[in-house]
Amino acid sequence: MQALFKFASGDIPYTLQRSPRRRSIGLKIDAAGLTIILPQRAPLAEAERVIQLKLAWIRAKLLERETRPTPIESPILQWGASALWLGEPRLLQAALRVKLTEDTLYLCAANEQKIAPALIRFYQRSAKPYFAERLALWAERMALQPRQLILSSAKTRWGSCTSNGDIRLSWRLMQAPASVIDYVVIHELAHLLEMNHSARFWAIVERACPDWKTERAWLKQHGHTLLAWE
Ligand SMILES: [Zn+2]
Image (cartoon, rainbow, N blue to C red; front, side):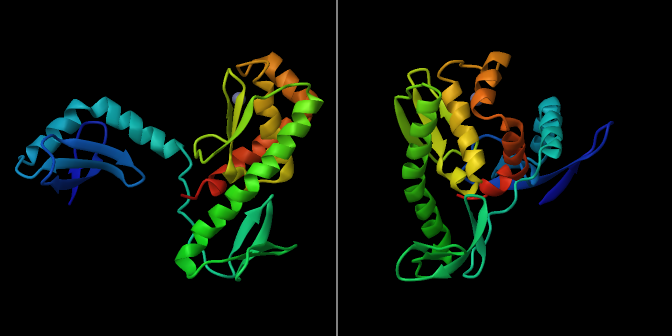
């Protein structure tokens, strides 16, 4: 049920839900906006009371949501659609064996719903050896010794580096151009020397990757497309 909370500096539309399982009032803000979840028997006025109580927080969250780019919906994959491989589109085709050519990625999937999981498996399987090679190469050039490479599925970050030298890279990066992947590898390696984003840190990145600003901008611009996966 749609409702409207009226107050002096503008109305807040919200969705009202009832939940038989809840004992307390729930409140969430997502792409759909504000939702208030009431226990089965709670009076409707309770919703407005909670909004009033949390008004400052709700308004701040809604504002934040407006200024953030809306994540795009997960793509519905079909045979004949394209997927990114190292920054280049590849046509998705059904086959009995996984195979990558200049313009086509053949995947084994029984039906179109299985394309996304098959594609993710392909990215994950390719990511480990690819990242390992790039990491070894850049570690040698930068005279650094990461402890180990861990493949991550992180949606919130492309890579990370811990103080004991573990470097995590997201398989989702396999969709990005090779130069962007190299930038992320260099970025995480540089954290072995500087655990911050200080001027000293960026100077280390720049020595290995003079175009880091372009690569970083690419990620900022296209990142949401790469993250539109489960
Ligand atoms: Zn960093």
